[in-house]
Length: 270
Ligand code: ADP
Ligand code: MG
Image (cartoon, rainbow, N blue to C red):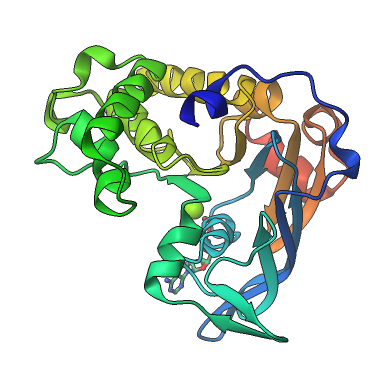
């Protein structure tokens, strides 16, 4: 199924009629007295690449973390593939699921963080197959085969036996991307995946992400890389102060931003 997920995207009918893969409605989140998310609505269809831009502190990471239930929201709901991660309907009532069921649900969503958080005592391949084998019960030999294919996909087949300390930051982040793919998610969330990298290593990670986007992976990417947004995004969302200020095709939001806050934010990058 990984091979299928990574196969070049076949021409598909316009997705306008298909149910969105991700549907966030009126998402609110407080930290103490601070109202961090103030009613986020977002729909992402299968195969779409959505880039979220916005100043530091605007709630981008918190929103991503709500999608896979690393944070609980206070109001609203987010469905991924028709189910709200962390919850299940029991009759009319939405109740929290067990840890085991949560692990099953989270397989829908991979995540790549700014800090790649690879296990330092494991090789690249061991990092990639840790969740499939350890959490999801995939037989080790099968996981190894898939893991090697994924490392090939991110251009690191020859680094399978290297430890993180032996890899550059860009290579480590590509391993982290392969690790996120290894659970065969329907959606991958990227939270500033290149922000911790030396400038000369950013390009290889963006190129890897670009290839995945071209292959039809559904992605929500928080980044300050405007060039990536322009070239790879189907849609750009600008967040500020816990709300979506503006969203649309990249040439509109980046080229002709309508909202003064979007204009002010983008003016820093020119
Ligand atoms: P962004 O990713 O856009 O920079 P974040 O979602 O990380 O924004 O943070 C939004 C706001 O929520 C910030 O003011 C931040 O300090 C606050 N915040 C985030 N996580 C926590 C937390 N675990 N506890 C308290 N405040 C938090
Ligand atoms: Mg953040």
